[in-house]
Amino acid sequence: KAVVVVPNFYYSNNTTETGLNGIYIFGGRLYYTTPNDDLTADGSKLTSELVLKSINLADPEKTATRHFVFTDNSAQILLTEQSNKVVATYIMGSKLYNLDVADGKSTEIKSHEVDEETKENKDLTVSNVKYDKNGDGQYTGLFFTDGDGSICHIAAGASDYQVYVTNP
View (spheres, rainbow, N blue to C red):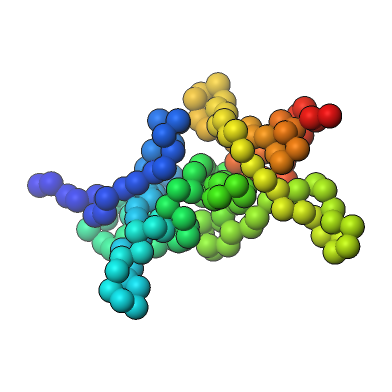
């Protein structure tokens, strides 16, 4: 008997890293990203957004669990398991975020620079992203350049990044 495991079209905007294809398996669940099929007030589908869903592989005929809506379908998402917790480190626009998949809480990673007026950390601008892997080939984080052109790294699920090379 054939069983439909992913009842939606899965989608990933990542075209440079074939391992980040929008399908992941952690703890007996299959996680995937798919265009949002919710409707707007005029009846159009919200396909400009991505939804992170999962299904229990032991009982795939149950309804998929909806975890989070990314408001841009071009979000680049690295889903990993850290200390038995599924987290998404993702880039949307030019901003970097971490998502705790279990509670649906997304946190923007801010710059180390502090705004003189507000005394708050400035927005971090991310570009030139390259994902890194450990010796087993598992994705563990990403390298990027910030708005000043410095080379930085963040581990998957981490709350802060490291500057490896400062652009003078």
